[in-house]
Amino acid sequence: MQMAILAGGLATRLGALTRDRPKSMVEIEGKPFLEYQLVLLTEAGMKDIVLCLGHEGEQIRRYIGDGSRYGINLKYSIENNPLGTGGALKNAEKLLDDTFFTIYGDSYLFLDFEKILSFFESRNKLALMTVYRNDNQFDRSNTMIDGDTVTKYSKNGVTEDMVYIDYGVNLFRKEVLEMIPENQFYALEDIFPRLIEKNELLAFEANDRFYEIGSVRGLQDFESYIKEKA
Image (cartoon, rainbow, N blue to C red; front, side, top):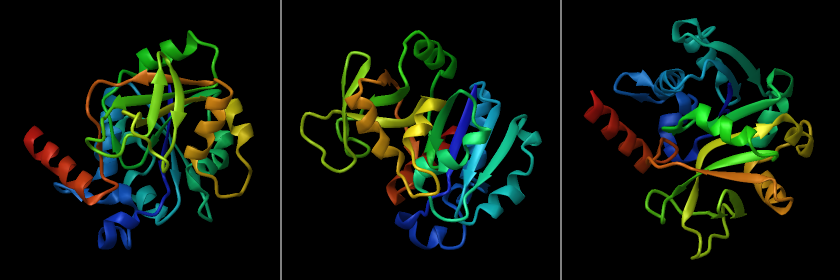
């Protein structure tokens, strides 16, 4: 199993905390968030990692190194100009397997990746989105599903009938990258409506709440979780 971590974006919502460092390097209880994320992923059996880096990415390379201390096979994909989450995957195309997971660099999630992969391989679809019945609790719900299929997704035009939220992990067949232009800014969220239109986006429901550090509230929630866990 391979995971691409999308850690190249600017973290404008965190203000001064990320003025001179990537969001993944924000410290919680003395350790950068990325370390918590990598440990969680390896404990879940994810040993093959591609780190997609951009803003201040060299800080991550210096800290993480070759990944050996985490027991992972690590590759780096560096973007020289901001490419967005979709563009970052296109930039990493040569490093990616025929089937690969993605996770955002600010997400801390509890999933059985083997189970998700098995479900995905049992269907003949191009992509899978993990979803969570959020009911606007932790962030705005933005997704509709029908059984095991995503039927509607929108980051902005959220409607009352949306009770799910994209959980933060996706699974793609590599041919999806053909839909993303090269060397251009392209958001991953823009590809989901295109996949939905083709009936090619599976849904896999997660049961545990997610944590994220992309917002001040999310960072505070994650800090509380780590302190309680200690």
